[in-house]
Image (cartoon, rainbow, N blue to C red; front, side, top):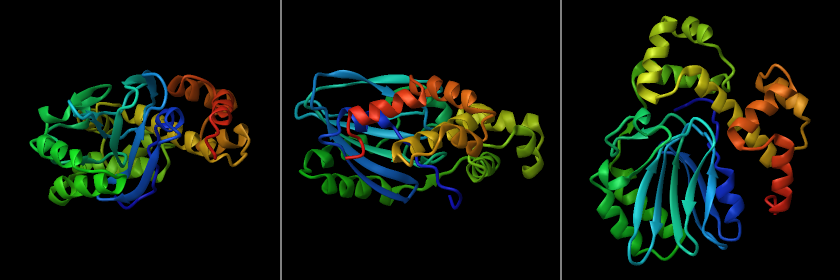
Length: 266
C-alpha cells in the first residue's frame, strides 16, 4: 500500500510491560511491526484501543500455547494478560489482511478468535515458535511459516481505493469527498466499506485521526493541543479531547501524565 503511513499503536501493552517490551518496525509485507513482552506484574486486563488493524497474538506457554487473531475495536476495550507468560505479536498495517486468514476484517471487529479456527497454519506456527529462544528467532519463524506463503488481500478494488484516500488525507475526508474523488456514489461507498471492514467510512476516519493524535502525544513533541486539533481536522480543542477520551479512556492531558508515570520516553 504505497500511501501515507499511519502506524497502528496499542499504547497500553507498551506501558504495562515496558520492562520487557520489544518491538521491530518493518512496514513491509503488509506488516507494521512485530512485538513481544512478558507482563512483570500481576495478571491484569489491559486496555485495547481502536487502531483499524489486525493483530495476531501468541501466548507462548510451555504447557498450552495459544494463538488469537484480534480485529480492530470500535471503542475502547480490554484483553486479559497473564503474569509471567511470554507473548509474541504481529500487527498488520491499517487496512491489510493476509490471505492465510479465511475471514474479512468485518468478521472480527470487536472480537478475538482462535487462530486455528481461521487458518491452517496455526499448528505449524505454534510448533515453530515453541522452538525459539529470542525475539529475532520468533520473527524469522513467523516469516517462514506465514509471510513467505501469503498473498496479501487488500480488500475489494473500491474498498482499497477508499482506504488509500483516507490514509492520504489522514482521516480528514468526508464521505461526499470520497464520492467525488472515487467516482462512486455515497450509498455504494458506505455499503462496500461496511461490507468489508465492518465500520462506516466516518468511523474509520475518526480512528485514523485518533491514532495520529496518539502517536503525536507518545512522541512528546510538545505540540499544543489546540494546534494538534487544527492540524488533524477537529473543529476545536474540545472536539479533539472528547474523541480522544472516547477511544483512549482518558483525555490527552491525563494520558500524557500516564506516559510520565511509566517513563515511556526512557
